[in-house]
Image (cartoon, rainbow over all chains, first blue to last red):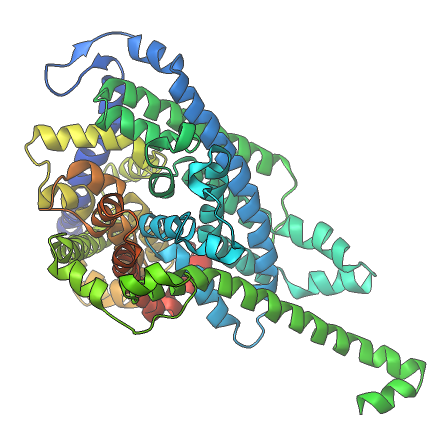
Length: 296
Length: 293
């Protein structure tokens, strides 16, 4: 008898398992798995949505990899990441060290510093577009000069970097503050007794122990900044002057929805994906090859 | 007292130095925190100030001037005018709400199945869910657009909602990790009392997971209220235009009419800041402690 009870129970558990999973399984298959397969198929097709799709082999890959505008957008995006990521990490770490001290009122600062992270990047981009506006903008009112910030090719990308760093710094600093908190105080005290100065304590104690936080901040920062779009769309529509702010995601968007070259846009998206995977693996290897310190 | 101690020689000096050092450090800390907070708040405050100016004052006075007279003309014009902005607010609110409810409920279901139930194929499916996390949104965006427009759903409410309402792998993963950490005794006790899985989920697991579930719900609300690229692609015209798309179009169309445009950005930003401030305690601690990384 108990065996029968157990087996009905078991059957019921299996059934509930599938029932609980069903909605997400439908959603994830149709709206994530199918598109992932389709994007690969699409990269071998010529399709403008009007006529039927036509198999063209590697033509899209050839076209994209020799497309000057696409390669330019890769360079622009790389420059953006190379500037924004170190800036927001270093400034976030610095700010995190002050947040970690938990002076009275630091909870309020924490909330304030996170505000840009909650606000719509597109809306913030447009607020900054006003700040950078030549005649009635805020920045020129402060510096007392008429500078065409967003119409000058050499200033467009720095502007996007500033806005992006300004948006992310509070979020990054929060993680560093939490990471620093997690370092056991006896480790720090011991080094202090050994006579280590402030810089030595930071360089040889805090920084190595922050490795997991650093890895998280760098990987997520890299993945999201390589896909920057909203800020660039607001500050440098259509790539901005001389395409100086033409980031990859924007390039993909224009290729698909202005030129209706869906096959080529699919190839560009795949190239971006491969770049992200490679960078993530490289970072993982770097962080794994260094000694890790276990923090209890 | 400090003065007298300072004069009394070597021993006293050693005693005083650390205290003075923390004082100096405190002053530096506050300076850094106050200055960076002002830099963060500045754009928010000044853009809101601009939205509360008359266009006459905006044209005549510097950008840093305080609004006088204080006027809500831009907001009234934005909602009542022919910009379709009032409808955009409604569309964005309904879309975000439907996604938050659907995604939270279905993700909780899936996470419970992965964490607490045993059935054939479970581990493979979990691995498959996880692997979709690696794929960035830009990659699936184009096929998703083709799929929905070929199904005749382009520029509909469903196009905005369907891809996200059935749960997200990210939420499922985080919730599963949390459900695994709950004490098994409680759940076994409920099983022995004859409770079904739905009852256990609702009466035991969810109440024990309130901070994680509410943080996820707020993050989902933020993500979809702020969403721009997907609505930009899949909708056109006024009918299903969300706030971000409406704001971008308004800025292109009325470039230079900054009092109006700043009213739009303020409406896009402020509801979420309010939501975040209301939930900040749970969110700030969950973000860094509960394994959101």
